[in-house]
Image (tube, rainbow, N blue to C red; front, side, top):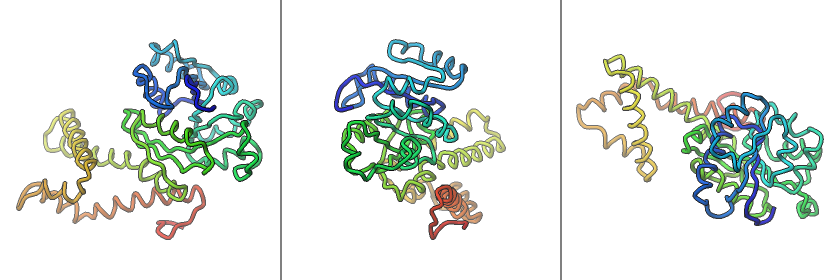
Length: 308
């Protein structure tokens, strides 16, 4: 792939996350994003006619740079420089083992957002063997480079967190820079070692759902004391957003809590109920349980797992 400009990016599958990433890239492409993220063309290959229609309607203003195919994965990959594997995890095997896919992937960069699929599993699926430690194979211009990423659902509003697995040490640096540039368009990115990937699946991926449960409970309680639901929704969302901004400045959670409390105040009274009901312990256990399940999926035992 080299350092050429005007690359073509392909999405195999384009559900919620794939659509969010595509939207972020198309939104910024008009502004001429810096560095290696300058894609001139985009291709999407999806399975159903309904998906084709949805994407055509959503991105109708980008017809000059976006091509949408139905059930033409091999063609889409063959016409692209970089491929984002965004299909359902259950469909990965059928997608990557079709005739011609291996040849069309040769010499390209495959970025996976498919949960549960490691680079080694993907490499074995495509090639039928692992050559990641063969120097001669890595030096070949036909070598397929694979990077694993874990974006979370907040990418849909371009405020996501994408964890990128530390790639093979011989991966060309420009490929990692390109991957970060793609996901920086839909939030923030961080590169973590393989040993932290299962934990990151929960810490970055599960927590939006946890926050949503807490917000839903607060909204329902607000309605119970007479606040209209739309007012409660807007108020709780803004309070959560403001809290997040304070935390992002480096302020510790305990400091945020202390700033909002006063002797005999209503906030402290509410906090005491949370402490009495062991909210901290239950929230912590929920996160540990999510990490445990992520590790069990990979059969990786850990001393703090909540089940064996």
